[in-house]
Length: 471
Image (cartoon, rainbow, N blue to C red):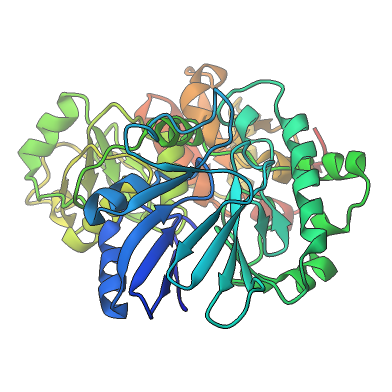
Protein backbone atom coordinates (compact mmCIF):
# COMPACT_ATOMS: atom_id res chain seq x y z
CA UNK A 1 0.00 0.00 0.00
CA UNK A 2 1.15 3.52 -0.86
CA UNK A 3 0.12 6.46 1.32
CA UNK A 4 1.20 10.10 0.97
CA UNK A 5 -0.11 13.19 2.74
CA UNK A 6 0.09 16.69 1.27
CA UNK A 7 -0.38 19.75 3.45
CA UNK A 8 -0.97 23.35 2.44
CA UNK A 9 0.01 25.73 5.25
CA UNK A 10 -2.01 28.68 3.95
CA UNK A 11 -5.23 26.67 4.03
CA UNK A 12 -4.22 24.36 6.91
CA UNK A 13 -5.52 21.69 4.52
CA UNK A 14 -4.52 18.06 4.00
CA UNK A 15 -5.05 15.87 0.96
CA UNK A 16 -3.99 12.28 0.39
CA UNK A 17 -2.67 9.93 -2.30
CA UNK A 18 -3.57 6.30 -1.55
CA UNK A 19 -2.47 3.58 -3.92
CA UNK A 20 -1.52 0.01 -4.58
CA UNK A 21 2.05 -0.48 -5.72
CA UNK A 22 1.29 -3.99 -6.94
CA UNK A 23 -1.19 -2.77 -9.56
CA UNK A 24 0.03 0.80 -10.01
CA UNK A 25 -3.35 2.40 -9.27
CA UNK A 26 -4.04 5.31 -6.93
CA UNK A 27 -6.85 7.53 -5.64
CA UNK A 28 -6.48 11.14 -4.49
CA UNK A 29 -8.70 12.32 -1.64
CA UNK A 30 -9.63 16.00 -1.17
CA UNK A 31 -7.24 17.55 -3.73
CA UNK A 32 -6.80 21.30 -4.01
CA UNK A 33 -6.51 23.08 -7.37
CA UNK A 34 -2.78 22.52 -7.95
CA UNK A 35 -3.21 19.34 -10.00
CA UNK A 36 0.50 19.34 -10.91
CA UNK A 37 1.38 18.45 -7.31
CA UNK A 38 -0.51 15.16 -7.44
CA UNK A 39 0.52 14.29 -10.99
CA UNK A 40 4.19 14.70 -10.01
CA UNK A 41 3.77 12.66 -6.84
CA UNK A 42 2.07 9.82 -8.70
CA UNK A 43 4.89 9.77 -11.25
CA UNK A 44 7.48 9.68 -8.46
CA UNK A 45 5.69 6.70 -6.91
CA UNK A 46 5.20 4.90 -10.21
CA UNK A 47 1.38 4.84 -10.01
CA UNK A 48 -1.50 6.18 -12.10
CA UNK A 49 -4.26 8.29 -10.60
CA UNK A 50 -7.36 6.36 -11.63
CA UNK A 51 -9.83 7.77 -9.09
CA UNK A 52 -10.38 11.18 -7.49
CA UNK A 53 -12.71 11.79 -4.57
CA UNK A 54 -13.54 14.25 -1.83
CA UNK A 55 -15.14 13.93 1.56
CA UNK A 56 -17.66 16.77 1.19
CA UNK A 57 -18.60 20.07 -0.45
CA UNK A 58 -15.84 22.26 0.93
CA UNK A 59 -16.34 25.77 2.28
CA UNK A 60 -12.77 26.92 2.85
CA UNK A 61 -11.15 26.27 -0.54
CA UNK A 62 -12.10 25.60 -4.12
CA UNK A 63 -11.98 21.87 -4.75
CA UNK A 64 -9.46 20.49 -7.21
CA UNK A 65 -11.31 17.25 -7.85
CA UNK A 66 -12.67 18.24 -11.25
CA UNK A 67 -9.33 19.78 -12.23
CA UNK A 68 -7.37 16.64 -11.34
CA UNK A 69 -9.89 14.27 -12.94
CA UNK A 70 -9.76 16.29 -16.17
CA UNK A 71 -5.96 16.27 -16.12
CA UNK A 72 -5.55 12.54 -15.52
CA UNK A 73 -8.71 11.00 -16.98
CA UNK A 74 -9.53 9.62 -13.52
CA UNK A 75 -13.11 8.91 -12.52
CA UNK A 76 -14.76 11.11 -9.92
CA UNK A 77 -16.26 9.55 -6.79
CA UNK A 78 -18.72 11.81 -4.95
CA UNK A 79 -21.12 11.47 -2.07
CA UNK A 80 -24.72 10.65 -2.96
CA UNK A 81 -25.98 12.50 0.12
CA UNK A 82 -26.96 16.10 0.71
CA UNK A 83 -30.54 16.07 -0.55
CA UNK A 84 -31.86 18.37 -3.29
CA UNK A 85 -30.05 21.48 -2.04
CA UNK A 86 -26.59 20.12 -1.19
CA UNK A 87 -25.86 17.32 -3.62
CA UNK A 88 -23.25 17.63 -6.38
CA UNK A 89 -24.91 19.28 -9.37
CA UNK A 90 -22.12 18.42 -11.79
CA UNK A 91 -21.95 14.71 -10.94
CA UNK A 92 -24.04 13.43 -13.87
CA UNK A 93 -22.34 15.63 -16.44
CA UNK A 94 -18.90 14.52 -15.27
CA UNK A 95 -19.81 10.83 -15.16
CA UNK A 96 -19.12 10.59 -11.43
CA UNK A 97 -19.87 7.50 -9.40
CA UNK A 98 -22.07 8.40 -6.44
CA UNK A 99 -21.17 6.74 -3.15
CA UNK A 100 -23.72 5.51 -0.63
CA UNK A 101 -22.99 4.54 2.95
CA UNK A 102 -21.06 1.27 2.99
CA UNK A 103 -19.95 1.37 -0.64
CA UNK A 104 -16.48 -0.06 -1.27
CA UNK A 105 -13.92 1.47 -3.61
CA UNK A 106 -11.09 -0.81 -4.69
CA UNK A 107 -7.69 0.54 -5.70
CA UNK A 108 -5.82 -2.63 -6.45
CA UNK A 109 -5.47 -4.43 -3.11
CA UNK A 110 -6.48 -1.34 -1.13
CA UNK A 111 -10.09 -0.84 -0.13
CA UNK A 112 -11.81 2.41 0.81
CA UNK A 113 -15.19 1.96 2.50
CA UNK A 114 -17.45 5.01 2.45
CA UNK A 115 -19.12 5.98 5.71
CA UNK A 116 -21.84 8.63 5.59
CA UNK A 117 -20.85 10.94 8.45
CA UNK A 118 -23.13 14.00 8.23
CA UNK A 119 -22.92 16.90 10.63
CA UNK A 120 -20.25 19.23 9.34
CA UNK A 121 -22.15 19.02 6.04
CA UNK A 122 -25.17 16.86 5.15
CA UNK A 123 -23.37 14.93 2.38
CA UNK A 124 -20.10 14.30 4.25
CA UNK A 125 -18.42 10.92 3.85
CA UNK A 126 -15.35 9.48 5.55
CA UNK A 127 -13.31 6.56 4.22
CA UNK A 128 -12.15 3.52 6.15
CA UNK A 129 -8.86 2.37 4.57
CA UNK A 130 -7.92 -1.31 4.48
CA UNK A 131 -4.68 -2.77 3.11
CA UNK A 132 -6.20 -5.89 1.63
CA UNK A 133 -2.82 -7.42 0.87
CA UNK A 134 -2.21 -7.95 4.59
CA UNK A 135 -5.54 -7.94 6.45
CA UNK A 136 -9.28 -7.55 6.18
CA UNK A 137 -9.35 -5.09 9.09
CA UNK A 138 -9.22 -1.32 8.46
CA UNK A 139 -6.05 0.50 9.43
CA UNK A 140 -7.19 4.10 9.23
CA UNK A 141 -9.94 6.64 8.65
CA UNK A 142 -9.71 9.46 6.13
CA UNK A 143 -12.01 11.62 8.20
CA UNK A 144 -12.17 14.83 6.15
CA UNK A 145 -13.88 17.49 8.25
CA UNK A 146 -15.78 15.00 10.39
CA UNK A 147 -13.14 14.19 13.01
CA UNK A 148 -10.03 16.29 13.57
CA UNK A 149 -7.11 15.91 15.94
CA UNK A 150 -8.62 17.26 19.16
CA UNK A 151 -11.83 18.54 17.60
CA UNK A 152 -14.71 17.87 15.20
CA UNK A 153 -15.97 19.70 12.14
CA UNK A 154 -18.22 22.62 13.01
CA UNK A 155 -21.91 22.06 12.16
CA UNK A 156 -22.87 25.73 11.87
CA UNK A 157 -21.29 26.64 8.52
CA UNK A 158 -24.30 25.84 6.36
CA UNK A 159 -26.26 28.39 8.36
CA UNK A 160 -23.60 30.98 9.16
CA UNK A 161 -21.62 30.86 5.91
CA UNK A 162 -24.09 29.69 3.27
CA UNK A 163 -27.10 31.42 4.81
CA UNK A 164 -29.32 28.34 5.12
CA UNK A 165 -31.31 29.39 8.18
CA UNK A 166 -32.31 26.95 10.88
CA UNK A 167 -29.86 24.18 9.99
CA UNK A 168 -27.12 24.25 12.60
CA UNK A 169 -29.03 22.61 15.46
CA UNK A 170 -30.06 19.68 13.28
CA UNK A 171 -26.54 19.43 11.85
CA UNK A 172 -25.09 19.30 15.36
CA UNK A 173 -27.45 16.44 16.20
CA UNK A 174 -26.43 14.64 13.00
CA UNK A 175 -22.81 15.08 14.02
CA UNK A 176 -23.49 13.57 17.44
CA UNK A 177 -25.03 10.50 15.80
CA UNK A 178 -22.15 10.24 13.31
CA UNK A 179 -19.67 10.20 16.18
CA UNK A 180 -21.56 7.32 17.76
CA UNK A 181 -20.66 5.24 14.68
CA UNK A 182 -17.04 5.33 15.80
CA UNK A 183 -17.82 3.31 18.93
CA UNK A 184 -17.55 -0.01 17.10
CA UNK A 185 -14.15 0.82 15.59
CA UNK A 186 -10.84 -0.20 17.22
CA UNK A 187 -8.53 2.07 19.21
CA UNK A 188 -5.61 1.40 16.84
CA UNK A 189 -7.43 2.99 13.91
CA UNK A 190 -5.37 5.87 12.56
CA UNK A 191 -7.18 9.17 11.98
CA UNK A 192 -6.13 11.25 8.96
CA UNK A 193 -8.10 14.53 9.00
CA UNK A 194 -8.64 17.07 6.27
CA UNK A 195 -7.41 20.06 8.26
CA UNK A 196 -5.00 21.08 10.99
CA UNK A 197 -4.50 23.96 13.40
CA UNK A 198 -5.45 27.32 11.91
CA UNK A 199 -8.42 26.10 9.91
CA UNK A 200 -11.78 27.82 10.45
CA UNK A 201 -13.59 24.49 9.93
CA UNK A 202 -13.43 23.82 13.68
CA UNK A 203 -12.74 25.80 16.82
CA UNK A 204 -9.74 24.06 18.41
CA UNK A 205 -7.96 21.86 15.87
CA UNK A 206 -4.73 20.23 16.94
CA UNK A 207 -1.45 20.75 15.12
CA UNK A 208 -0.47 17.08 14.85
CA UNK A 209 -0.87 15.67 11.32
CA UNK A 210 -2.66 12.54 12.49
CA UNK A 211 -3.87 10.68 15.54
CA UNK A 212 -5.45 7.39 16.55
CA UNK A 213 -9.05 6.81 17.49
CA UNK A 214 -7.93 5.52 20.88
CA UNK A 215 -6.03 8.71 21.64
CA UNK A 216 -8.93 10.87 20.49
CA UNK A 217 -11.20 8.94 22.86
CA UNK A 218 -8.89 10.03 25.67
CA UNK A 219 -8.41 13.71 24.79
CA UNK A 220 -10.95 14.90 22.23
CA UNK A 221 -13.78 16.67 24.10
CA UNK A 222 -16.27 15.86 21.35
CA UNK A 223 -15.91 12.13 22.04
CA UNK A 224 -16.45 12.63 25.76
CA UNK A 225 -20.08 13.70 25.36
CA UNK A 226 -22.68 10.99 25.86
CA UNK A 227 -25.67 13.33 26.07
CA UNK A 228 -26.93 14.74 22.76
CA UNK A 229 -28.22 18.03 24.16
CA UNK A 230 -24.97 18.65 26.00
CA UNK A 231 -22.97 17.92 22.88
CA UNK A 232 -25.09 20.27 20.77
CA UNK A 233 -24.63 23.10 23.27
CA UNK A 234 -20.88 22.48 23.44
CA UNK A 235 -20.20 22.17 19.70
CA UNK A 236 -22.18 25.27 18.77
CA UNK A 237 -20.71 27.44 21.52
CA UNK A 238 -17.99 29.96 20.70
CA UNK A 239 -17.40 28.94 17.09
CA UNK A 240 -15.24 31.53 15.29
CA UNK A 241 -16.69 33.81 12.61
CA UNK A 242 -16.50 32.03 9.23
CA UNK A 243 -14.62 33.96 6.54
CA UNK A 244 -16.95 35.73 4.14
CA UNK A 245 -15.70 33.77 1.12
CA UNK A 246 -16.98 30.46 2.53
CA UNK A 247 -20.39 31.15 1.00
CA UNK A 248 -18.82 31.50 -2.47
CA UNK A 249 -16.85 28.27 -2.04
CA UNK A 250 -19.91 26.27 -0.98
CA UNK A 251 -21.82 27.36 -4.08
CA UNK A 252 -18.96 26.83 -6.53
CA UNK A 253 -17.98 23.46 -5.08
CA UNK A 254 -21.58 22.27 -5.23
CA UNK A 255 -22.24 23.51 -8.75
CA UNK A 256 -18.84 22.65 -10.24
CA UNK A 257 -15.50 24.46 -9.90
CA UNK A 258 -14.19 25.68 -13.25
CA UNK A 259 -11.45 23.60 -14.88
CA UNK A 260 -8.66 25.93 -16.03
CA UNK A 261 -5.75 23.60 -16.74
CA UNK A 262 -2.91 25.60 -15.19
CA UNK A 263 -1.76 27.63 -12.22
CA UNK A 264 -1.77 31.42 -12.59
CA UNK A 265 1.42 33.21 -13.65
CA UNK A 266 1.00 36.96 -13.08
CA UNK A 267 3.06 39.23 -15.33
CA UNK A 268 4.88 42.41 -14.42
CA UNK A 269 3.14 45.69 -15.18
CA UNK A 270 4.60 49.19 -15.15
CA UNK A 271 3.54 52.11 -13.02
CA UNK A 272 1.46 53.76 -15.73
CA UNK A 273 -0.43 50.52 -16.32
CA UNK A 274 -1.03 50.22 -12.57
CA UNK A 275 -2.60 53.66 -12.56
CA UNK A 276 -4.75 52.70 -15.52
CA UNK A 277 -5.93 49.48 -13.87
CA UNK A 278 -6.82 51.29 -10.65
CA UNK A 279 -8.68 53.95 -12.60
CA UNK A 280 -10.64 51.22 -14.37
CA UNK A 281 -11.78 49.76 -11.04
CA UNK A 282 -9.15 47.14 -10.22
CA UNK A 283 -8.28 46.58 -6.56
CA UNK A 284 -4.68 47.45 -5.76
CA UNK A 285 -3.40 44.88 -3.29
CA UNK A 286 -0.27 46.08 -1.49
CA UNK A 287 1.49 42.94 -0.21
CA UNK A 288 4.26 44.69 1.75
CA UNK A 289 4.55 44.62 5.57
CA UNK A 290 2.35 47.15 7.31
CA UNK A 291 5.31 49.35 8.27
CA UNK A 292 6.27 49.81 4.60
CA UNK A 293 2.66 50.47 3.63
CA UNK A 294 2.33 53.07 6.37
CA UNK A 295 5.45 54.90 5.17
CA UNK A 296 3.94 55.44 1.71
CA UNK A 297 1.37 53.75 -0.52
CA UNK A 298 -0.81 54.47 -3.50
CA UNK A 299 -4.12 56.06 -2.49
CA UNK A 300 -7.11 53.75 -2.47
CA UNK A 301 -5.13 50.51 -2.12
CA UNK A 302 -5.54 47.70 0.41
CA UNK A 303 -2.66 46.45 2.54
CA UNK A 304 -2.70 42.67 2.90
CA UNK A 305 0.76 41.38 3.89
CA UNK A 306 1.74 38.06 2.37
CA UNK A 307 1.85 35.84 5.48
CA UNK A 308 -0.02 32.81 6.86
CA UNK A 309 -3.22 34.84 7.29
CA UNK A 310 -3.18 36.11 3.70
CA UNK A 311 -5.64 33.61 2.22
CA UNK A 312 -8.16 34.01 5.01
CA UNK A 313 -8.28 37.81 4.87
CA UNK A 314 -8.09 37.91 1.09
CA UNK A 315 -11.18 35.73 0.88
CA UNK A 316 -12.98 37.87 3.44
CA UNK A 317 -12.13 41.29 2.07
CA UNK A 318 -11.64 41.01 -1.70
CA UNK A 319 -14.44 41.04 -4.30
CA UNK A 320 -14.73 38.11 -6.70
CA UNK A 321 -15.94 40.19 -9.64
CA UNK A 322 -13.16 42.80 -9.83
CA UNK A 323 -9.61 42.51 -11.26
CA UNK A 324 -6.70 42.52 -8.80
CA UNK A 325 -3.18 43.91 -9.16
CA UNK A 326 -0.37 43.15 -6.69
CA UNK A 327 1.84 45.99 -5.52
CA UNK A 328 5.30 46.11 -3.97
CA UNK A 329 6.59 42.57 -4.52
CA UNK A 330 8.81 40.69 -6.94
CA UNK A 331 7.71 37.84 -9.17
CA UNK A 332 8.24 34.98 -6.70
CA UNK A 333 6.00 36.62 -4.09
CA UNK A 334 3.45 37.57 -6.75
CA UNK A 335 3.36 33.95 -7.90
CA UNK A 336 2.87 32.78 -4.31
CA UNK A 337 0.05 35.25 -3.74
CA UNK A 338 -1.67 34.35 -7.02
CA UNK A 339 -1.49 30.65 -6.15
CA UNK A 340 -3.04 31.32 -2.72
CA UNK A 341 -5.89 33.29 -4.28
CA UNK A 342 -6.35 30.63 -6.98
CA UNK A 343 -7.00 28.08 -4.23
CA UNK A 344 -10.06 30.08 -3.13
CA UNK A 345 -11.28 30.97 -6.61
CA UNK A 346 -9.95 34.53 -6.82
CA UNK A 347 -8.62 34.09 -10.34
CA UNK A 348 -8.73 37.65 -11.72
CA UNK A 349 -5.12 38.69 -11.04
CA UNK A 350 -4.03 41.03 -13.82
CA UNK A 351 -0.36 41.41 -12.84
CA UNK A 352 2.10 42.79 -10.31
CA UNK A 353 4.35 45.81 -9.85
CA UNK A 354 7.60 45.52 -7.92
CA UNK A 355 8.97 47.53 -4.98
CA UNK A 356 10.37 50.10 -7.41
CA UNK A 357 6.82 51.41 -7.74
CA UNK A 358 7.42 53.29 -4.49
CA UNK A 359 10.88 54.66 -5.30
CA UNK A 360 11.12 58.42 -5.74
CA UNK A 361 12.36 58.00 -9.30
CA UNK A 362 9.45 55.73 -10.33
CA UNK A 363 6.46 56.85 -8.30
CA UNK A 364 3.42 57.44 -10.49
CA UNK A 365 1.24 59.25 -7.94
CA UNK A 366 1.63 61.16 -4.71
CA UNK A 367 1.92 58.59 -1.95
CA UNK A 368 -0.22 58.55 1.17
CA UNK A 369 0.98 57.66 4.64
CA UNK A 370 -0.94 55.67 7.25
CA UNK A 371 -0.87 56.77 10.87
CA UNK A 372 -0.31 54.71 14.01
CA UNK A 373 -0.54 55.77 17.65
CA UNK A 374 0.29 54.23 21.00
CA UNK A 375 -2.53 53.39 23.44
CA UNK A 376 -1.68 56.49 25.47
CA UNK A 377 -1.91 58.66 22.38
CA UNK A 378 -5.17 56.93 21.45
CA UNK A 379 -6.77 58.03 24.73
CA UNK A 380 -5.95 61.65 23.87
CA UNK A 381 -7.66 61.24 20.48
CA UNK A 382 -10.67 59.67 22.19
CA UNK A 383 -11.01 62.71 24.43
CA UNK A 384 -11.26 64.78 21.25
CA UNK A 385 -14.13 62.68 19.90
CA UNK A 386 -12.48 59.83 17.96
CA UNK A 387 -14.21 56.45 17.65
CA UNK A 388 -12.41 53.35 18.98
CA UNK A 389 -13.15 50.31 16.78
CA UNK A 390 -12.18 46.77 17.82
CA UNK A 391 -12.00 44.41 14.80
CA UNK A 392 -11.24 41.13 16.62
CA UNK A 393 -13.48 38.07 16.78
CA UNK A 394 -16.48 37.91 19.08
CA UNK A 395 -14.78 35.45 21.43
CA UNK A 396 -11.76 37.71 21.83
CA UNK A 397 -14.03 40.70 22.39
CA UNK A 398 -15.92 38.96 25.20
CA UNK A 399 -12.74 38.03 27.06
CA UNK A 400 -11.77 41.70 27.39
CA UNK A 401 -11.75 44.92 25.38
CA UNK A 402 -10.91 48.57 25.78
CA UNK A 403 -13.58 50.47 27.68
CA UNK A 404 -15.87 52.36 25.35
CA UNK A 405 -14.78 50.52 22.20
CA UNK A 406 -17.19 49.50 19.44
CA UNK A 407 -16.97 45.98 18.00
CA UNK A 408 -16.99 45.11 14.29
CA UNK A 409 -15.21 41.98 13.10
CA UNK A 410 -12.67 42.64 10.34
CA UNK A 411 -14.33 40.13 8.02
CA UNK A 412 -17.60 42.08 8.16
CA UNK A 413 -16.02 45.44 7.49
CA UNK A 414 -16.54 45.64 3.69
CA UNK A 415 -20.29 45.08 4.12
CA UNK A 416 -20.69 47.19 7.25
CA UNK A 417 -19.03 50.50 6.40
CA UNK A 418 -22.24 52.31 7.23
CA UNK A 419 -21.54 51.42 10.86
CA UNK A 420 -18.33 53.48 10.73
CA UNK A 421 -18.79 57.29 10.77
CA UNK A 422 -17.21 59.09 7.82
CA UNK A 423 -16.94 62.48 9.52
CA UNK A 424 -14.37 61.83 12.24
CA UNK A 425 -11.27 59.89 13.24
CA UNK A 426 -11.48 56.13 13.69
CA UNK A 427 -8.94 54.44 15.97
CA UNK A 428 -8.67 50.79 14.98
CA UNK A 429 -7.39 48.06 17.29
CA UNK A 430 -7.10 44.28 17.42
CA UNK A 431 -5.06 41.98 19.66
CA UNK A 432 -1.58 43.12 18.61
CA UNK A 433 -2.01 45.61 15.74
CA UNK A 434 -1.79 43.36 12.66
CA UNK A 435 -5.46 42.91 11.79
CA UNK A 436 -6.23 46.50 12.70
CA UNK A 437 -3.57 47.66 10.23
CA UNK A 438 -5.46 45.80 7.49
CA UNK A 439 -8.69 47.45 8.65
CA UNK A 440 -6.98 50.82 8.68
CA UNK A 441 -5.97 50.42 5.04
CA UNK A 442 -9.47 49.38 4.01
CA UNK A 443 -11.07 52.29 5.85
CA UNK A 444 -8.52 54.74 4.47
CA UNK A 445 -9.15 53.44 0.94
CA UNK A 446 -12.87 54.12 1.51
CA UNK A 447 -12.27 57.69 2.58
CA UNK A 448 -12.22 57.32 6.38
CA UNK A 449 -9.65 58.96 8.67
CA UNK A 450 -8.32 55.71 10.17
CA UNK A 451 -5.45 55.32 12.64
CA UNK A 452 -3.97 52.04 13.90
CA UNK A 453 -3.51 51.49 17.64
CA UNK A 454 -0.13 49.76 17.71
CA UNK A 455 0.17 46.84 20.10
CA UNK A 456 -3.60 46.52 20.24
CA UNK A 457 -5.47 45.26 23.28
CA UNK A 458 -2.32 43.68 24.67
CA UNK A 459 -0.51 47.03 24.77
CA UNK A 460 -3.66 48.75 26.03
CA UNK A 461 -3.87 46.36 28.99
CA UNK A 462 -0.13 46.63 29.73
CA UNK A 463 -0.54 50.40 29.90
CA UNK A 464 -3.15 49.95 32.64
CA UNK A 465 -5.91 51.59 30.59
CA UNK A 466 -9.59 50.81 31.35
CA UNK A 467 -10.87 47.42 30.18
CA UNK A 468 -14.30 45.79 30.03
CA UNK A 469 -15.49 42.20 29.63
CA UNK A 470 -18.49 40.59 28.00
CA UNK A 471 -20.83 42.12 25.50
